Length: 86
Image (cartoon, rainbow, N blue to C red):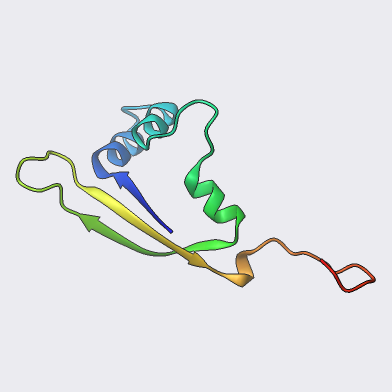
């Protein structure tokens, strides 16, 4: 799973220039939609790499590309019942 984040948007969020809701809007989330990064974490994925993707000469914003992969140690613990099923 990969997610792209506006580098400028993240910087503005960290600097307090925009709110978390405004940043989520930049990510493409709309009211009532789920958060893709939260979904990854809930499914037991962890962040494995972060890359900078240049915006190019005619674009004014680079992107951070976050890569997630499955991590069994990060998944929610599920116990088997007496029949051996989860």
